[in-house]
Length: 140
Image (cartoon, rainbow, N blue to C red; front, side, top):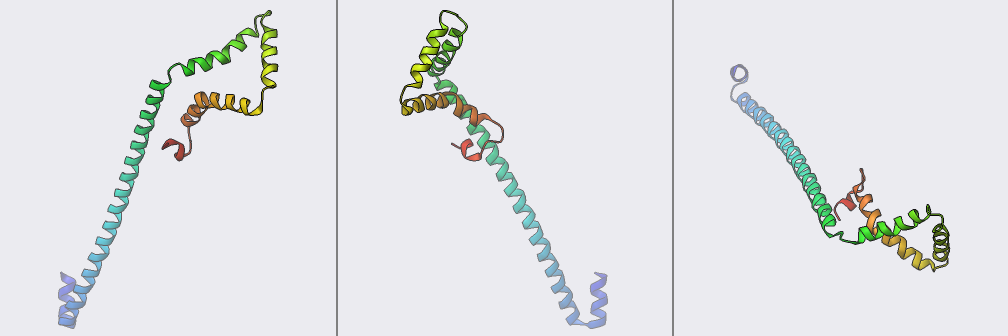
């Protein structure tokens, strides 16, 4: 106010227009900064919401996997455990060795299928649960 009166007294009507222009420019600059801050806040809130939704989706996916796991996990665990246990029974150890020798003689495509099944049952789920996993796996 004081500045306007002083400029008006010194320069007359053109000074008032200059002061008005400078005030308007300052207000526009302020409005721009305010809009920019609001935009950043909105973007951050949206990012947080997406992260919450991703966590919720991942939890739902995990629960679905648990509900649908059925007997296959137990079967795979049994298949892995039986030879391990048999190795500690002296009369059974030769059968384990013979079994693995026979498995070694199967075609590579069959061995690949066996490994894939085991990874599908246990490996993939554990990979998805590890910290720092890629986002692409989290959203699948």
